[in-house]
Length: 459
Image (cartoon, rainbow, N blue to C red; front, top):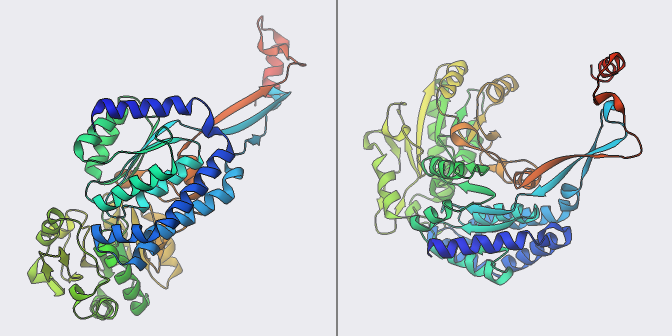
C-alpha cells in the first residue's frame, strides 16, 4: 500500500471521528459485541492461522490468545458505562459556586502496531481498549505472522467500515509510511530497537505513545522455595510458545545452595510436560522464521547444555534447552533470548541478587519463588520491573483487573481493563462555573480586603 493510500485512510478516519459517531456508549458497546460475535464465529480459523504461523495447538491458542481477547471484550462491555462516566471532584472554596469534574475523552485516530509472537492477542486486545474509549483505529499486524494477519484483516472487514477500523498489512515499507502520518495516539508492541524508532517518529507530531517492549526478565528462586512446584511453573512459563513470550522467564537466578536440586526438577518437568522427544510432540510449537531460528541457535553454548539442545532446521523447532554454569558475560545473557533456552545463574545472597538485577536494564517482568514473606517484600519493593508473580510465572497479564506494561527500557504505559480504557483516553479536567455569583476578589484593582480574602481561601 502506498503512502498516499495510507494517508487517505487516516484522513477518512479523522473525518469520521469528528462526526462524533464514536462518542456514544451505545455505539462502542455495539461495536464490541459485533467484534466478539465475529471472533467466536472464526474461532477455528483463528486457531488454524496461529498454528500455521507458530505451530501452536488449538488449546494453547485459545488459552493464550483468543480466550483472553474474548474475556477483555466481555469485561469492557460490562464496565464501559462506568469507565466513561464523568467523575465529579471536590471544588476549592475559592471557586464557589462551581462543579469540577473529569471527563474521559477519546484521543481520535489511533495506530496499533503489533508483533508476531502472539499475533491475535497483541493486535486485537489493544483494539478492544481503543474502541471502548471511543477512538478509531488503524491496525498494523506483523508481516512475520502472515496467516494470522490476513485473517485479522478479514475479520475486521466483516465487522467495521474502513473509516472506523482499518487493517494495513505489509512490512517495513508500510510501517515507515504509517509512522509518517499524524495520529492522535500510537500503541506499539515489539522490540526495543523498533520502539525507539516509533518514539522518534511520534515526536515529529508530539503524538503520545504506549510502548510495550521486553527485556531479560529474571526468575529468582530463593532457597526456601518449593522446588518441585517452582520447576513445574517455570517450565510452563518459559517454554510456552517456545519461549517466544515477552514476559517469559528469560533466565533463572537461584541460590547456589539449591541449584543442583532445582536443575534436576526442571529436567524432570520438561520430560513430564513435553515428553522425552519434544520435537515429536504435536503440541510443541516452532520458531517464527529462519532468521530467529538461527539467532536462537547461535546463543547456545554446547559445553553448558545440560538438557536438550537439539534443533530441526526444516521444522524450525528447538528443544527446550537448559544451560548450567552460565555467567552474565555469556552470549545468551547479552540479549533477550525469545526462544526455548533457559540459562541458570546463581547468587550467594538475596541482597547480591537484588543489586545485580538493579544494575541491569529494567525488565518487563520479574518472578520470585520463595516461602519467605520477608524475601518477597524485599524483592518486590527494591527491584524495578514492569509486573510479575510470586510463586508463578506469566499469569499476571491474564486479568483485566490489573494493568500490564513496563517502564524504562521495557516500555511505558499499560493496558488491560480500566488501564487500557485510560490509556486510549484523554482525561479532560473541567470546571462548570455558575453565573449567579461572581466573587470580586480576583479582579483589579487589588486592595487590603482582596489580600485578606486571598490568604483566607488559599493556604
